[in-house]
Image 1 (cartoon, rainbow, N blue to C red):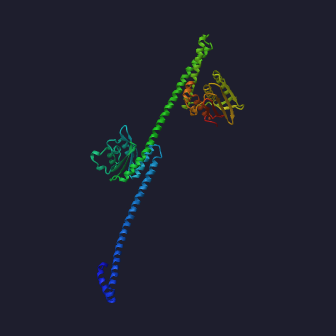
Image 2: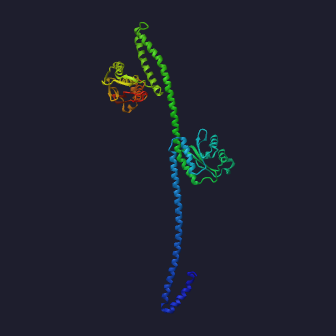
Length: 492
C-alpha cells in the first residue's frame, strides 16, 4: 500500500490512541503535530521529483557538451589540416607541382576515390586537364583528349555560377544533362562527383573535381571544406603561374639578347674591315704616296681621318661588348710589364689632354714590375677611363697614380672635371650609362667605355669603382691582381 492511501486510516488510529492514553485535553495538540508531519512528507516527495528531473537535465546537458566538444574537435582538426594543406601547396613556385599537390590534398581531405584539377583556357572557353590523383594513365589520356566546355559541363556550371556542383548519382541524372564529361566519369565507375570552381578575384582560373564510386554525394561540411580549400589555393596557383610566365619571358629575352649580341658581333666585324681600309688609304694619301696633295685637301682629309678613327673606336667598343655578352671573348693572358703599358697610355692620352689645354701627370711606384694577364685589355681599360676623365674635364688636368699593394696593382685616375651626381654614380658602369642627359649632349660618346672597362677588370678578377663630387671632379680606382688565371676569372 502506498503512503498516501494509508494516511486516513493512520490518522484515525492515531487520534483514538491519543484520546485513550492522554485524555481529551491533548487531542488537538497531537492532531496539529501529525498534520505538520504530513506536510513535510509531501514536500520531500516534491524534492525527490525535482532532484530526479535535475539529474536527467544534467545528464542531457553532459551529453550535449560531449557532442559539442567532439564537433569542435573535428572542426579544429579540419581547420588544422586545411591550413597545413594550403601551406604545403604554397611551398612551391613550380606550377605543375602546385597543381599536383592541390589535387592530392583535396582527394585526401574529402576521402575521395579520385581527384582531378583543371586550368581554364579563357580563349578556347574550355578546361584543360592538368593533374590527377588515383587515376588510370589511360583515363588521363581520355580526359586530356576531351576538355570540358564552359557551357555544357558540370565543372563549367560550377565556374559560371561560382557555386560547387554536388552530384549524388550520375546514373540518375536527366538525359539532357548526361554530358560527355559525366559519361566519361560514369564509364570509369564513378557514381557521385563534386565540382568546385577556383576563382581569383573575379577571374575563373580552373576547377577541382572529386569523385566517389558510391552514390550519395558529399556532405555539406565536405562541400564547404573543399570550397574554402579551393579559395586558399587560388593565390598559390596564380603566383606559380606568374612565376612560370616570368621564367618563359626571361628565357625569351635571354635568347633575344643572345641573338642581338651575335648580330652586333657579326656586323661590327663587317664594319671594321672596310673602316680600316678607309683609314689606311687616307694615311697613304696624306703621306703623299699617290703624289703631291693639294693643300686645300689636307684639312678635309685630316678631319676624315680623325672621324674615321673615332668611328672605329665605337665599332670596336660595340664589338667587344657584343663578344662579352655572347660569351665569345676570352682573355689572352701572358706576362706583361706595367711600366710599358703606362708609357703607351701616356703617349696616347697626352695629345688628347693637350688638345683641350689640360695637364696629364703620371706617378708610379718603383716596384711595379711584371704582371700576368691580358696587356691589351688592361691598356684598353686604362685608356677608356683616362679618356673619359679627359672628355669630362673642362679645365685643370688629370692625374694617374699607380702603386703596388701586396699582390695587387692599384690604379688611381683623378680629374678636375664636372663630376657625377650621387644618384647617378651607381649607373656610370652600366651599358649606355651616360649620367646627366644635359652633359651627355655636350660631351659626345656612346656610354660603353666604362661598361667595357668594368667587364675587363672583372674578367681579370679585379674591381673598379668611382668617387665623385659634382663640379669638383671624380676619382676612379682600378685594382687588379698581379696574376690572373688562364680562364680570366681572378687570381690563382
